[in-house]
Length: 424
Image 1 (cartoon, rainbow, N blue to C red):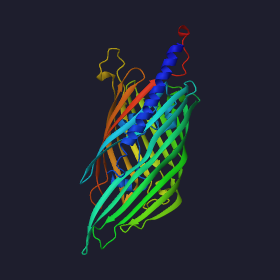
Image 2: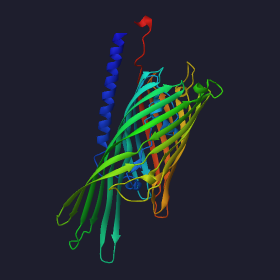
Image 3: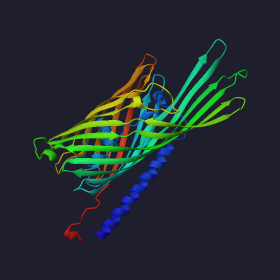
Image 4: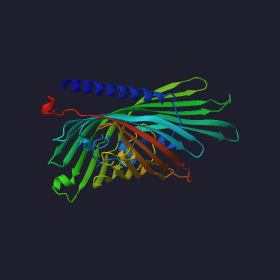
């Protein structure tokens, strides 16, 4: 038994090393072009919010605020309180973005998360993660024609914010699960503005601004297991979840470079505070029998209180994301086929961005499907596909159609389990 534990621990350490190496390699693989093409809407504010809390929940179109089980959710720390075994999850995505005049593809690792159950009886689980929060990537080119000349105008940007999180869960009164999490956020945002006149009579202009952002925030989660609290089977498997995320104060150091075709560069450095507002979440999950589960949640953030610091000044509004999804558990038969052993998921979602363009709200809606392929008792591969539409044509707006493929690897192993007497 001791030898088995040594081998298992060594194997798990190798898995962790492999996942971190894979994460670093993948991140660097997509950073060769400083200003790759992307959504023009990411030019506003800090960029696109990353709503992928896990591959499981993404295939269901939800955030998993009230969804528990043997998986690690990087949004609500309380959702990991019922984890039965150590779980390492790696999630990544690849998408195809269609605009009116171009098609863009991109891929990246969304995050890596580790959940370690310290005590199943007390609902104590330690969670550690590295996840993406916000991403920005765009390149916009316009050709301007005036009676006097024609010149090119380029606006580009890239960057984002990632976070490292450390959390702990605890169970009270038999059916109330608590979770607290500390997050350290860091990142950068680079913006480029370039005017190319192609004429010696006019000076080309070049403006480049780089913002380095660092800060920290806290999250608190709460999930009520109604069945365990009431000691009644009438409620069935029914959970209600809540989430609170504190304000994120980002220290923003900006370096601005101003240059022209005659070579006179000017560098200016400034410091300001950027404050991301607090967020609230609510969700409900109901399981019917042993195979069918439905979950729904909403995530609300007070972006009307956003303090942009030295970032772009625009009109910011409160954002909200709604989702509802279902999950079909695999068959419990001992002689089940491959297809009967899969877990099937589907869902729908809707959200509005935290900014306006030409006084118009930017909304997105979409559908998602997915499945989980078991690879033994504690390992699995999660797959998902979603299709969404954001914005509209007309009123100076752009409509985006986005097809996204997600995949997640889950490595599980039992830790802190007392061996049986016959195994000693």
